[in-house]
Image 1 (cartoon, helix red, strand yellow):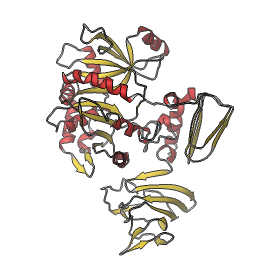
Image 2: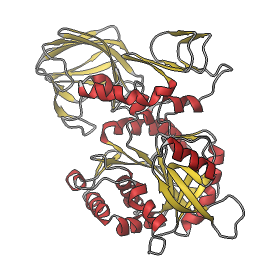
Image 3: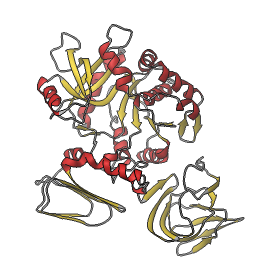
Image 4: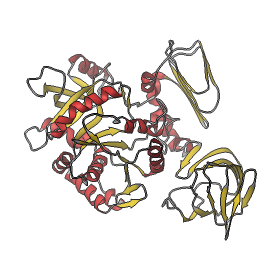
Length: 490
């Protein structure tokens, strides 16, 4: 039986879905369309695929959110390989790292490459289309999936399809790739739609491991060499594979399309593999902005999508999400309203793409709202900044059963800990003791300390910090069970 490995590329930041998506907690980690995050839904998309042996997922991601991805896989009951990119170098190097990981398998498995932040509404139809492409991939072709366009979109790239494969086929099954087209202007997009031979570029690909590596050797041997060198000097860090940072730093940046696929379309007489596109109509969306999310979510008779504590009166075509407070809208149309504990977005749906300008402004002003949520996830649990003022800060801390914060010290702040639920194991200086519910303890400035949860229920506590400087970088870390260094805060 043919073996297939789902490769999930999780490197995007999703700035147009701010304020839910943040740079260090991007959209693929969010449950935007159901209980699963987009990443979890992507991994689950291959469950039950018939007539093929589906291996454990192989995820390539940024170091910033590696622990969240590992936790999301654990909650699904999934085990997978997580490869960490020391720096973002676009999709071609990311896929090359995945292929080098899959190269360890003797079966030369087929790789199904999926971005972690896309939505597929009809999973059964998607699996049917994937199944139809497995035979082509097994024969040594590179398969991509072209979304049947519904409108002249200017936010997507396009793929022009040529002759059907095999040539005698009269069924809409697979086509030779003629060319890839950049994101067009409105007039060109209308021409593509009218032609009937163009598809939206989904960013989904399928090929044998050896086929991708040999294609990179022909097209971008510089990228392949840098990735091989970094992979050769890799290390295993708990659940993660770390490629060598110094070796990967010199890797050129390029996309799968530019590095290989466009060459395949143009140069068919070379030793490159054949490239085909298979039509896909399964409710695909790259959820690139709030208007595209509104299109794929279930709506009421007035076209409204409401999630969280939301009240609407005389409203039409609204996307309203509330995480923290009651949000009420009266007499509004064609708007997006997104409420989080530390930011609120209000914009017309037609201007949804311009949210990126707000994020750019936040970066220029070095404001934290562009980087992190008020609630921050860590490998041991999470903390939520409840209040902050001059020389004080209050946080709600949750520590998972069996987890522990690093052994650390602060130069500029003292901390008061009050246990609300569970039992805390506290190390303070040379002593270690338990703190139970409704009890508290004090950590003086400059004292080594550690917080652990020895119990079987989450430990919940309130932390009151006081001092001259309360930044998360005021940490001297002496020991950490998660292998973090001083760059990893908390």
